[in-house]
Length: 62
Image (cartoon, rainbow, N blue to C red; front, side):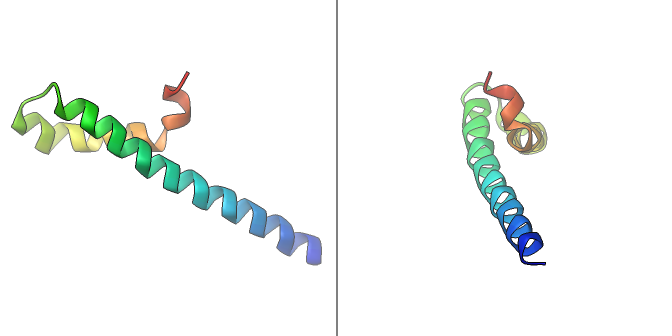
């Protein structure tokens, strides 16, 4: 029973860390989009794209 609590605690901490890093990556991708696109693209398209790329950041760092 104690090992289940420890394992779930470790997995929870890893998920929390991944979500924090994904939000930092979202900001980085959003800033990159803002440098190249118009204001309408930033409002309607780039925010969604940067959030998706931020959640999948591990695949975009290679």
